[in-house]
Length: 385
Ligand SMILES: Nc1ncnc2c1ncn2[C@@H]1O[C@H](COP(=O)(O)OP(=O)(O)OP(=O)(O)O)[C@@H](O)[C@H]1O
Ligand SMILES: [Mg+2]
Image 1 (cartoon, rainbow, N blue to C red):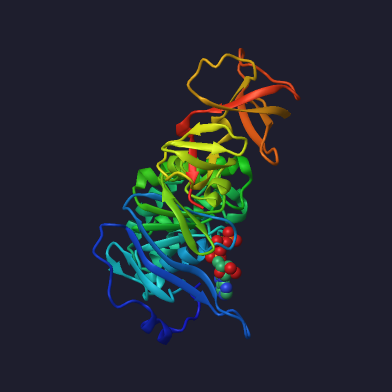
Image 2: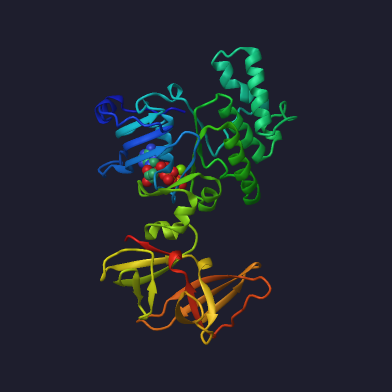
């Protein structure tokens, strides 16, 4: 559904000078969206001057908590919403002011919005019929996407005779049958239960690789984004905090927000003492892969599974840094054991979460035991803020 918008406001708002030519599928430059805030209140800045290039053929995810501006960004790429400022280019064509049907994109929403009285095949063919695509061509393309989304044999069912996952496949097929250059997906798996969602994540990624078109995927589920994406943009309050491949976002978060939002992490306050050396609050010195000047206060982020535990009296025959602590809690998790360790010293002891594998031969620790927590310098990220 296209919403009303103020076109006069738009023409002045969109930047007349386009950014330099790119070979990106989708390119956002200074894109901002302000919504009226209601009587007497300030406008809401839903998206704040974001710059972003999404490559052709990429599976790109916008990830962030509720209200951070993901849907608004997607709707501006789709054309359901016009930017208050900035430029949106799709394959190097300025589309910021164009209506949705004049853009080479299609959108799949969380709610499938299928026509209940039509069959699967009719639902999928509907868009092509509207566009006067011939009968044979329509039949061929419908059959092609039905195979792609694995709905063969269900062509003549009505939506209510399908499961949630199957209905979402129809919605997907209905978008893909138009052969968009970019497919926009807003939490398309949000209504499915966890197990089905995980299956669909893998299938969706495989489908995307098969058709080779650019997917822009909105989710607030970090695991989903990590599983499916070639690159992820982490958003907060209308800003892009970090853009990169899943491994980089996970292993090298640049800010506290990203470190906290993606997976679990331990945050340790430290002060840089020397080149590549930081001092923790308990006075322990640890090495770092970083080049901040001496005296800088930093926060180190280390993932629980990157931390190892040894007994306090174990030999120091390893090349890792270690801090002393006491096991405060041990939680059995099946293939792993999660430990909470209180680090000694400092004004207030702080807990550290450690996930240690539970394979035979791996040492276990009891609550109250004195231990050393260690990690390799390369597994600690130095956060900016
Ligand atoms: N039409 C609108 N009018 C006024 N404010 C809006 C409108 N649409 C969105 N907003 C506001 O803009 C901000 C971003 O909303 P948006 O829907 O883009 O968030 P989101 O990241 O998709 O969140 P969610 O994960 O909950 O779907 C929110 O503060 C929201 O309240
Ligand atoms: Mg949303």
